[in-house]
Amino acid sequence: MTTTDMHTDPVVRQPDLGRSPQMHAVTRDRYGAPDVLRFATIARPAVPPGHLLVQVAAAGVNRGDALEVRGWPRLARL
Image 1: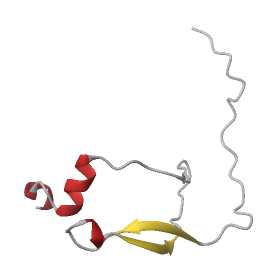
Image 2: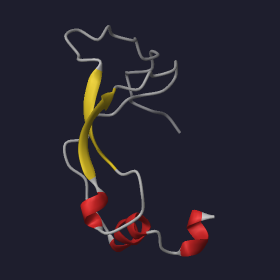
Image 3: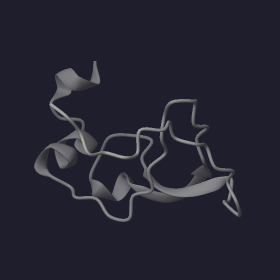
């Protein structure tokens, strides 16, 4: 099989021009109802070579996410 992909060069790491060393995140420090979630400013993680840091503008929440915040199933906490 052949490919028509012309972008076969390795990714060139660009400098963080004007990027803040911090980012926004939804965090939690304990299990509980959705009110344990907090909007926080945290340090931007270091990105090791060969990895990407993806900026997310929106994300969905499903039943599994809601149960995990509450600590269910209990086995997952052990």
